[in-house]
Length: 222
Image (cartoon, rainbow, N blue to C red; front, top):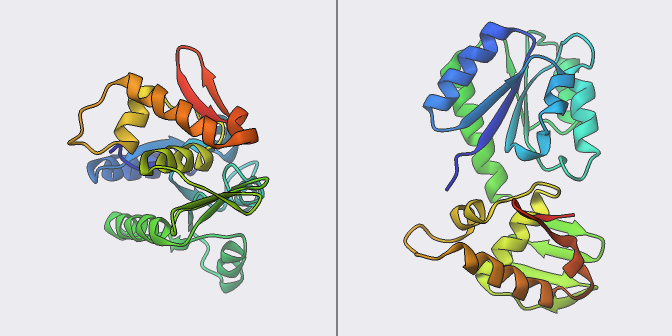
């Protein structure tokens, strides 16, 4: 399985580099951005968690979070605010915007690591229904419905659909899909991905056209 990807957004370069080094050492794939605008340019939808500073020049952390939580492509991404401000009103505002946790500077790197780990675990186990129009994917009950009618999928087909739908617009190569969906002890070829995508499309009816092929790259849900 690929490591969880984290984006650290803070205008303090030294802090970003420290967090990046330690989170990478903990097994995460970590990128940094020194402003909200730079973070947007990196394609936030590809990340599994954001460490987001509140007070930054230009677009603030709160403003960026508000944008992310109102966009269905990024609304599911957990956010941990990092800030020097510890006033109760700021904390409440952060949680009101959908923050998953809040860390006040100065902090220990171990504390941040523990909070990151806890939020990712909690986010993974929470009940989650993915939806696109009348296509519903329940990741807890492992069921798929279209217009309230049950669609019977194999486990592999379900996992492929849930992955693509939860990362709409992100192109996954065949090798990435093999790494993320198939067990490590199962030996399959990239052709296996094509076969399962074809079967999945047939079962999705009118939504088959939502799973697109980017020639030379892979598959994505549009």
